[in-house]
Length: 309
Image 1: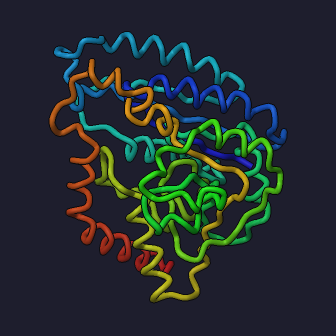
Image 2: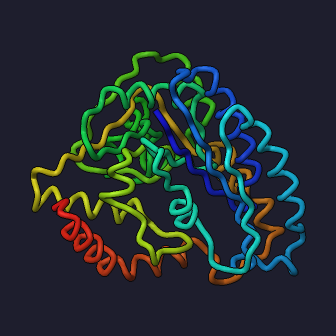
């Protein structure tokens, strides 16, 4: 089994890289010997996104830290890069660059997400139970801000009010993960995922909901994918797609709880790094969403041309 793990890092996320790489280091001890994981990371220092001349920290600080932290992943095949150009660059570009013929599954990791050192092992065990051609498998998560996330939420947190969901302690989540070994996968009726720690079948990632050639930077590929899936479910009941949630393995943001008012481990960097106006993820998202209807129409046409639908 060959898994292609993808993690995109902005400079203000560099301390989250320490936490993520540490968990991946721990995870390696539990992985089956016949599972090969290639980790693709990039530190994005694009001068299109960041005004380094006005920033109080130099890019060399982040380069040195990234190179040092990457030693934690020496037990994996780690393709680590630094993007230091002057073009728009983002997660879309890393996704496209990470496509490989040898890959069986793709796995996204958001750097500010906590996961147990057992989560990767249980995801792999879960994959062995799935027969669908197109699928997404995600761990359950802590309570989020609206009811659309409830089907994939850890049931231990469902009773928490939505406006209190960010008060949850990440250490409470960690304790519950270690004290609960009743792990299983559960089918989810309506697709709902966000790329925090999602594992995708190769056919889903490359064939059903691929990155369009003209996409660059950042945008809600997860939302685009869910629109495509819902369209297919409505007009093509034969499509072999299913989303699954891995129960008893819960992920959560590192910045919740005591850190929620400090922007976690990125706030102090954000105060020292000057971003160009067009660099904000929300701005890129707004542009992407404004073109969503066009992208979906193009995606459906692509699937029709390939005789997938």
